Amino acid sequence: MDLQRLTDDDLESMRRAPKIIVNPRARWVTKGGHREKNFSLQDACDPTQTYRLFLRISSSNPAVFSAGLARVWSSEATLILARYNGPYHPHRNIIERTKVPAGCHRHLATHRYIDAGLDPDGYAEPVSEYNSVEGAFECLCKDCGISSLEYNPFQPELEF
Image 1 (cartoon, rainbow, N blue to C red):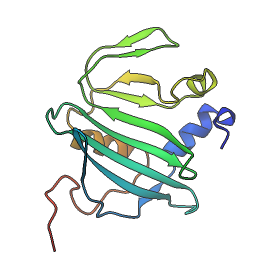
Image 2: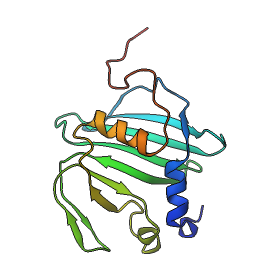
Image 3: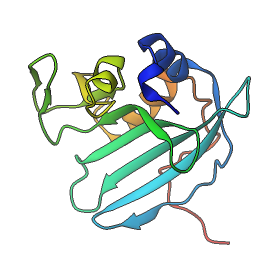
Image 4: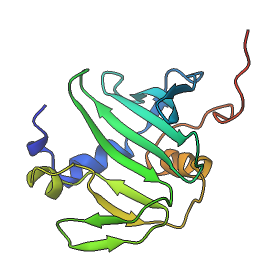
């Protein structure tokens, strides 16, 4: 996939496309100093278009979290379209030469950052719609056309 060909309209269209979670019972996995849960998604209108929703929470600091959406073309080609982060650090927008103070913020993939050879989702903006990973997950689902789950993905998992 040639990311350079993607316009901001293409990126926004991918973010907004209606999506369905195909593995609603994904499990938490411990990796290093955090727990992570990955959901597989499909475009509701075109199941050949696939996505991944990820949740990450620090094992030692609940303010260190991220809820994100990635477009997946293959195991080698993935693009993070959006990340909703916790308030654990400030962020510097390199191209705009602006600083987002420490607080909850949302990263968005943009053509400018892709074209400049920077992290595609290097642009961030402050948000006030959430203050927890649960809230970040809800905002991500609402903003990115993801059908809600019929259960709370943060409840302890039952063993069968």
